[in-house]
Structure formats: C-alpha cells, structure tokens
Image 1 (spheres, chains in turn red, purple):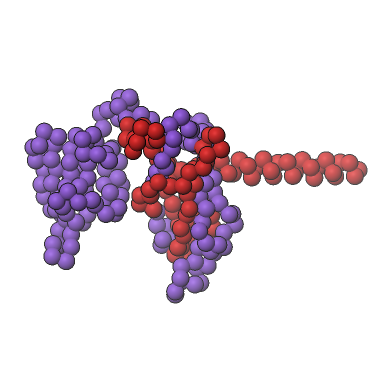
Image 2 (cartoon, rainbow over the protein chains, first blue to last red):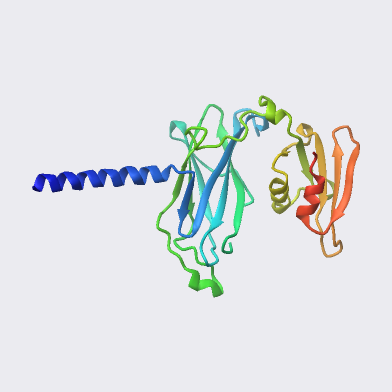
Length: 94
Length: 161
C-alpha cells in the first residue's frame, strides 16, 4: 500500500517537473500579467559590425493581458554555445 | 503599458562568429510590475524570476525570419530601406518602430550602401505640424514625397511596394 502511494508521489513529481521544463520552452510565456512571445530570430551575417562578430537579432512581442497598467523593464541575456552569455548590444521598440 | 496594449521590438546581440545562440533569457529588473505614483494598486508580483526561450528548436517553435541576407530568394525580393532623419541625422526609435510595424515586408538596412531606397522622414514638431516624407530610389530619383499628420500614415505611404 505504502509503496503504491510513494510510486504515485514520485510519478506526479516527475510529471510536474517535465511540465515545468516544457513550459520554459514555449514560445509564449507569462510573467504576472505580461505575456512575452518569441516571434522570430535573425542572424544578420551581412551586417557585421566587424569581421569577427555578427548581429543576432531576437524579436519579441509583449502584451498586457491584465486589467491594470504595467511598468516592466526586462533585462535580456543571450545564452550561446561554448558557455557564452551576451548582454544586448542594442534594443529597438521595447 | 496599458491593459490589452501590445508592443513589439527586438534585441540585438553582438555574437562572435561561429557561436550559436541557444536561449534568450528575459529577467525583470524589479520584483513588481506596479507603476510608480498613482498606480500602486496595480502591484502584481511575479510568479517567475525570468522567462526563457529556446532558440535552437524546430522551425515551428522558433520562427526564423531571415538567415543570411542575399541567400534567401524571398529576402532578395524584399526592398531594403535606409531610414534617415532630416539632413542625414538619425531617427528616433519610435520612427523605426512605426516603419517596422506598418511595413513588415520591408527590410530596414543599417547602412545606406546596402539599401535600395532611402526614406527621409522629418517628424512633426512644434514648428511643423505634419511628418514630412521623401523616398529616394538607389539611382537618386525621388519616387515619393508627401506629408501626413500621423507618423504611421506617413510611413505607410512611404513604404516601397
């Protein structure tokens, strides 16, 4: 009897964990009443600021789905291969 | 941001060649979304510390817009526009945003040399009631000039078809 309860508990924990991980990868995610949607990405290799780097552009949409005004500032970070992490080079329209 | 208001924009990252973007992480700078001053009743606490978007997933989950300029046939057919302010000055971000919102099929070029058209926009001011627009083709011919009260309308009529 106890083993069944423990098994069910472990199973529900695992399902929850998988669900949370899956939620992180959705193209639309919410923070409070703000829904942020990833609408595209672009690598502008033709517009290189220098010969060694290029611009990676990520486009998003933010929507206030609540009933109150929101004042939110988001700090963007780009995680990349080789353990690299980049801060935004420029922002446009957000 | 008001209720039901939407805003679109983009973040640009200067990435070393050969490095692939994996994830975009957006972290709110404050713990609350409330606006200061009289909007204190709208305090809403975040349920998450940050949101993360996978940039390596399938094309369905991560819509790629353009990969390499010049290699895509669809992109090659899109007009590339260089936006300039009066007398060659740079334009405010709101003007560029208006152009991208109203003319999504047009690529905004960062350098004049890469553009098919140059669009010079003189935003309205205290001394000028209308937004002035001049569109110059790469050959130097003026293909459109006009004025509009609304910046969005000015941009719409300026967009090369």
